[in-house]
Length: 289
Image 1 (cartoon, rainbow, N blue to C red):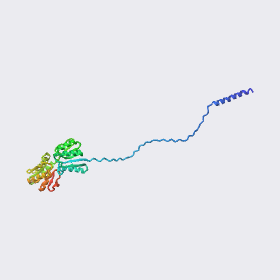
Image 2 (image 1 turned 120 degrees about the vertical axis):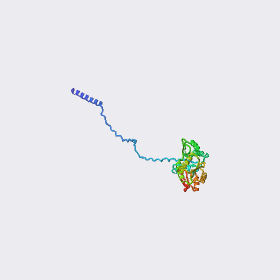
Image 3 (image 1 turned 90 degrees about the horizontal axis):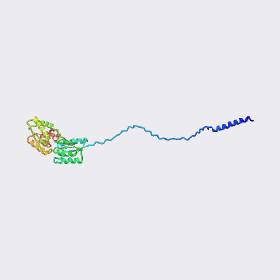
Image 4 (image 1 turned 90 degrees about the vertical axis):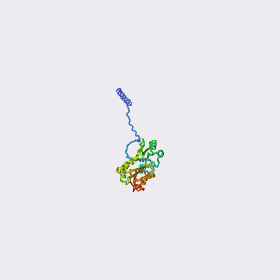
C-alpha cells in the first residue's frame, strides 16, 4: 500500500498541472465570415473634349456712303463754262458715284457768298464745285469758315489751304488751231471774236486764236469785242452782228450768243469750251475744248 501512494500523488500532480496549463494557454483564434449586402456607388465624371467644327461666317458689309456734291454756278447752265462742270457732275451721279444738287444763275452781286454759306450750314456737302470767276473773294471767305468741306472752283485765284482747290481751262492751244483754220478760210480777211471780259484767262484764249490767224494770213484783221460779263447772250449776239456788218466773215464765239448771230447771217463760227456743233450744225466748224 505504501508503494502505490507516491505514484498516485505524482499522477494527481501531473493531472492538476495539466489543467492549470490548459487554463492559462492562449485560446486559438476563430475566423468569422460576415456576408454584407452589395453596395452600388454612383460617381459623375466630367470629361472635356475639343471638337473642330467648320463654321462659315457671312457678314453683310455696310453700304458705301455716297459723296454729297453741291454745284454753285454764277451763270445759267446754258453758259458753256458752267455747263461743262455741270455735265461732268451729272455723269458722276448717273454712275452712282455722287449725290448731286445745284444752284445756278447766282450772279455777281454778292449772292454767291450767301448761297455757299447757307448750303454749307444746312446740308454740309462733302464737296462744293463751281465757278469763282467774278466771285473769287466770296468763295475764299466761305471756304475758310468751313474747313471740313472741300471747295473746288474754276478760278483766276490760287488755292487756299486746307480745303480750296482751283482749276482753269487750258484751251489756248486748240484755240490757236482754230485760228489757223479761220485765217485759211476767210475771204474778207476780217475775222471777229466776241469774248467775255479782258482778263488774263480770257485773253490767253483770244490771243492764241489771233496768233493762229496771223500765222497763216498775216494780212487778216481780227476784231475783238468784249461784252463786259460772262453771260449775256443778247449782248454777245448784238456785238457779233456789229462785227459782221463791219465785214467779218468768220466768228470765234468765245461767249454764248455769237454762234446764233453768225448762223443767222450764213457765216461760219467756232464754239468754245464744249462741242457746240448742235447749235448750228451747218455753220459751227469746231470748238476748242
